[in-house]
Amino acid sequence: MRVLVVNAGSSSLKCQLIETDGKVSLMKCLAEKAGTLDVFMNVSFAPGFQKTAHDVAGLTVPECLEKLLRVLVTDPASPIRRLDEVRAIGNRIVAGGEFFSASVLIDHDVREKLSLCEELAPLHNPAADACIDLMRRLMPDTPQVAVFDTAFHATMPPKAYLYPLPMAYYEKYKIRRYGAHGTSHRYAAQQAANLLGRPLEDLGLITCHLGNGGSITAVNHGESIDTTMGFTPLEGLMMGTRSGSVDPAIITYLMRRENMSYDEMDAVLNRESGVLGISGISADMRDVLEAAGAGNAQAELAIEMYVYRVQKAIGSYYAAMTRTDAVVMTAGIGENSAELRERIFAGLAHMGMILDKERNDVTGQIGVNRVISIDDSPIKICIVTTDEEMRIARETDDLVCRMPA
Ligand code: AMP
Image (cartoon, rainbow, N blue to C red; front, side):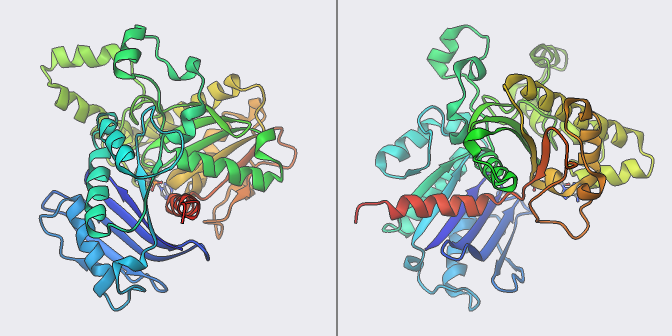
């Protein structure tokens, strides 16, 4: 089945056309900085995936998608000529609130509920909803599925998802932990079980999605029981530009002292903090590692803080579970940075997570799922390559195949 996967953010659009039968990607598209003067969009097709830049000057995220749909039916390298050759659309939705604990086919009722979730992810959900509406208009007969970042975490118990605030705020506004990166954590857990040759239901796993955004999840018997991201994707680990958890009193203090508006404070926490805020160099871990290697003290401090916060989160989930069989590393940093993994696990050997330095080496191993702990490490350490788009395509395929004829 040919599935168009659409991952829309506030200013970015990532799409793939995936043939789910052979699990192959036929087209990849990346648009960034949409809605600004610097917007760009690259589209590439199998087999060579030679990128072509398209003129998207002044376009918003849904407008970039409209442009992509035109490219899909006109580019000679495209495998399709008509939009109805796309059998289904899989939309990544960041926040599903308490409405959705699994992927769903989008109908009128689901679309209404999606609108109600917009304020839970104000950067992402409105763009995704606008893309859904556009495709309903242009491809009215093509089924659309919503795949939620939050769905995997629907199994968290109240003691993990509630905040110790007056209950009235949960009842009134549904303020609670929802988590994120669920598709990635679910996939990482399943792949780790495959690597270990044991049923997922028998395992206690700590999955670490360490990318530009980062979150860690305690996966007990295949279910998320706690995760570091919270009401929004701001809580938890130190990230590329996000602060992660800070004393909430700092926020009110700073707003008073600096006379900041809500939007200004929001920008500080979401865009100016984290690895960028401490290093003063970049949000990109590769740049920061390079600067630290060249002797930059702020870059080194940013890495130390990043590592320390990951170690503490892993330690807290070790305590939250009754058993831990493996820690799973995934996403840009988790998969690719042997140095960061070495530094993280150097502090966790006393808990029984013992890295094998040679296995940890990435040379020639990018994209290979594997165990990187020593043979008799009491807790295994695994690397899993995340592939969110493929997961979304497969969930979409599953739901569409189950549709009544
Ligand atoms: P993601 O959000 O999963 O695409 O991950 C992006 C993050 O992964 C960025 O901070 C990159 O700098 C980081 N990253 C990718 N490759 C490497 C690498 N080889 N070493 C260190 N960080 C990396």
